[in-house]
Length: 372
Image (cartoon, rainbow, N blue to C red; front, side, top):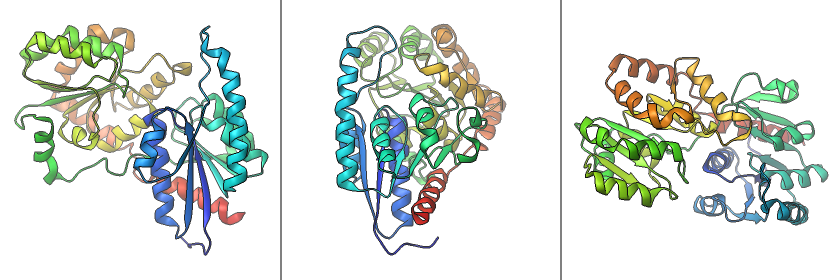
């Protein structure tokens, strides 16, 4: 690809969860590799994960006071419109001062104000829609955007067909470790190399049903001899720790949050996870057998749609959240003992991986900037 002889300026807006933040950083990293001169400004929501992770990755970020609108009746919605107006004013100032060549939206409520401000200043906008069900913000912005990068088929029911580009979802570049790191990864978590490992990840905050299931079945897990690497999330960690202490199970490693996810993926024989689009893209690349427990607390039940897209290809097992407490542990223990089924699931999910998604999105961004 031809490298430009000028400095391009790129705004990346959105965030709120790791599922938005890590793909955004991956897109920026890809652009930085493909362009000689490029300057970035991330725009996120104050107090959210991006305000920590983006600077750690070496990028500048500005935070907006914007907050999500609650679907239930709550006093928090009283401040929603005030924060939105504040965020719109700040976004206009950011666009005016930074003068971007392009704005990229990665989803999350922080993307709305900055992308609207960019569109009003005739800055070209590219959207990245991660899910099989399009978010409200992206649906509103779609007609004013240049391109919409998607990861699932059938997205023309939400977006203008001529603007859709199938790229897949970007994933963290350090996701896969070389085989020679395996021994160090087991040692990192204090796990035994000769025992199988179930990895349970329910997000940074935790998943109530998945944690309750583990706590109710600690004796069964202890007797199984299978090792469990359990990310409880910070909200559930204390309660889970108390239950684990009482059980005396020495084959379970409990952590509030796993920072070295590449090491966790490396030691896992079976993974139990929520079904966020970014997580699914990572799991496809990792290529391990998976049980998905879609969160019911998302718009239009889109995690179940994401999970079904794998289940229909025999690339994952799915347990509805309402059934997790009764069924999840039994399914996991049965599956990890079924070598043939594990091989089938691992093989099928691996075929769905798109390792160069960030580069594909970056190429679309560069094309638009060069055309302008």
